[in-house]
Amino acid sequence: MKHVISIILVSFVFLPAIYGQCDRVVSSVEDPGPAQMTGGELPADVNDTDWFFPSNYTRLVSFSGTPGNKASHEGMDYVHEDTSKEHVYIHTAAAGQVVYVREGCPESSQFKHNNYNRECGAGWGNHVVVKHGSVYTRYAHLKKNSITVKVGDELYAEQIVGQMGNSGRSEVRHLHFELGTRRDMFDPCGMSQNFDYVYNPNQLNYNQRTGIDDELAEDTAKVVVCHDRHNEIIKVKMPTSHSLGQIISIELYDALGRKLEEVNDLGANRYGEQQIPYSSGSQLIICRIITEKISFSKKIVS
Ligand SMILES: [Zn+2]
Image (cartoon, rainbow, N blue to C red; front, side):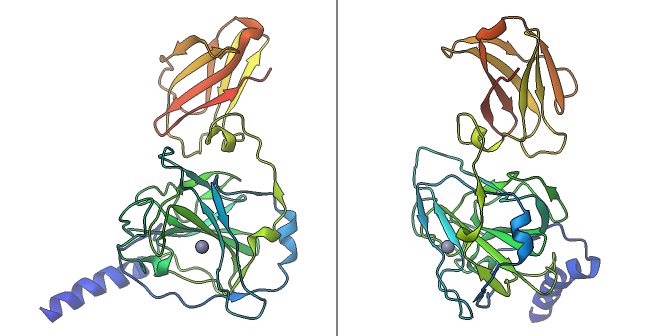
């Protein structure tokens, strides 16, 4: 029996390392996380990056630590306790490359002390690490099975990486957001890995978000453009690489919120650019886009 367990363990722990091509690590193991030290000055290239808040929230809990000592709260918490919001999306705080994804951590509920495998993912629960020049960001406690990116993905700023959750060492649905540096590369096949130093994310110079109405639209300004060309064609443009899924339908609304048109017949190509012939002129205000993952509204620009 012991032998069988060893074989199973060896297969799980070492096979991914042999192949060296992990795009994520899926495990419910409670792995240990070494302490992270508080860094002093942030690397200079941080100021060359455009930073955006990674999430909506109802309450914040600040970073705490003094340079040269172990950080007592190693990141910033974005708590979202509004139970009427089923999904709270987490966005990468800047363009960058995904270097580590940990999935498989359970959670007992969204709005109470999590009772399951609290040290799963070294307490971070399901989490994603993104590299931006010489610093990294970590997005922790994500909802199980919500992560939409994998190791190697190049992300544009504010791209969705997953949904806020309560996995790992967490008392309520929240994002624990870390900013850190690390001398060694992340091993995409290894168990959870710490930063050498963590920094107060409040030191970042955040840009204003540029969205229009609902929680996702606030964050997808760079994902979708609704364009009215000479009052005759509505163009909806999505980059081919995004995490929203295929477009299912597009609806057009006037200033009073009345639906003027619903377009379901989008043909074979449901990514990229859609062109809808429509000539109701200036009364068109909002286009609502329904995708496999989410629906959201955008102001039509001419
Ligand atoms: Zn935290």
